[in-house]
Image 1 (spheres, rainbow, N blue to C red):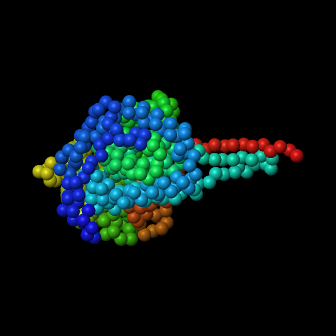
Image 2: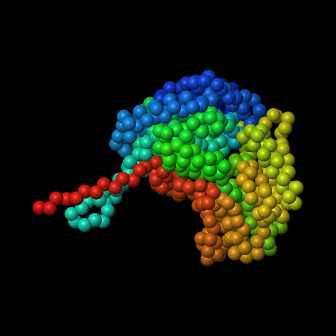
Image 3: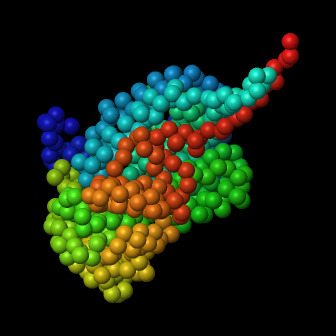
Length: 503
């Protein structure tokens, strides 16, 4: 990479021209082809060109990976290391990700279309911070003593659960993966990571970095392939102890069924969202709120589970506020993902682009007013681009306001009172996130308490860091990523009761 302070698009394109794309599965410390020899095309949404053919794993590969993970776990080669030693190795893993940030960021951008500025500063840097923070927390997780009588000792300890499968989404490929594999590894488990077939490249690349950091063979495995094949095989596997998933609510429900049909493996789910962003007339800064609303729908091309897809605006300021959001969205128009100035890149693939455009058409058919954007862009490039879109006069009964689109499509609803806002906000099967904008502290807290969501942001959108847990209510899932609460998903709690002999 050109060592200039601010790399240009030409710098990134030069690096891309010399990039080697990882394409094999990673099992028991080795890069391998799928047992069947099958592959799938990894196509860049930037320009529609094929980057590489990736190993398409299935049942045989799942069996091999689970056996390797189980053997490593039972051997104690990782599980029985002192927490301080696991911490040291994971911190080296995080450092290696940072050292290879340019390569990983470029893989992320070419693979799923996000702007290079965010691949580098958000995704790859965020993954390194996640692993480093989690590593630092390992030796801060204590057991407990129960309040017993003097002739008893009740010990409460945490133990690694065993073989953990992480099935992760395509929108933040490495970052979402790190939210799961970091605490799983930290607690001494063996991990099998199944990345989305839409964006497998960074997961495959960091597998080698894990080994370089000192993570033993069999402890960290990566299986690319179709969810309907290798994902299903892992979810049904009788020797997988825990499955943690981020993705759609429909798939999350199916994974629960697979767990019930197999060995009752623990299943932790972070699923869909249709998050309300509530703006009261007394918001402290309407321009700031509008900029946040624009970013809340356009960041990562709207492919965010917490995207602020429902904008609830107090009726008295609706026209004024929508005008401010339109103004703010001007800088979020699509651009080439390798241009460091670009904020809004490509939709992940043609299938998802078609889905987004289909919802834009549905919105108009349902009677909502297409007030901004709504057009495909740069069709001549072969890439997958769409303008950020605003629908006004929307209602919760419309598909565009009720269903998760996973694209930059904003539905604007209005309300007349705090109770009206809360009622509309909670009128959804989801409960992942919500935001409230008001200068009235009492109103802010009353609204936040009434919202059925796992994260509520007051006078900001999408706030938080590794110290705050992340997860949802209702059909947005169960369990929590990030923070010390993430360790709960990857440990068993054991009660050991000791009776003391009388003198």
